[in-house]
Image (tube, rainbow, N blue to C red):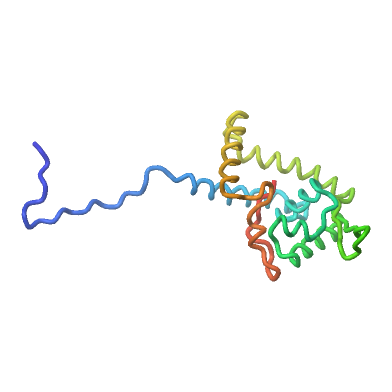
Amino acid sequence: MAARGPSPGEEETPAAWQPPKVIGTGFLLSALGAHSSAQYAARVQPLGLTPPHVGLLRAIAIGPGRSQQALADEFGMPPSRMVAFIDELEEKGLVERRRHDRDRRVHLLHLTKAGEKMMRQLAGVGQDAEEALLGALDENERQQLNELLGRVAAAQHLTPGVHPGYRRMRADQGPPAAPDCA
């Protein structure tokens, strides 16, 4: 028997809202990002660091001899906030400021021997964190995921290697919810 429509004068009862059967990719990326950030923060905390510290150490290791101002510009951070982070890294003995040869107002940033040692430790921490996060994927799948996410990040004009959370830092605030800089 064919289904009949509503009789004259009757209204069709609307179907109850049904949640989508598939969780969106954006939601999954956000959830995994938040999870990954929290897990990474917990891994570096015993070393006396936060993920923003790690990201700055990494940038200094990759490009030693850059000024605080150049690093603040790259990270999109207020210079005063960058100075505070560099002060913290210097107090921990991981970074040193060296005066520029021609402009004594400029401080160039370099890792200390302790900073180099810390970077070796952090490489292991990063590998462990990635293994814990991506253990369900084989090497081929990991490479493919990395390439795909790299394309998405490039299309969004994200600065390679710089977490967008740094741009939300203000001079009068601490770091945001922990950028993952592994």
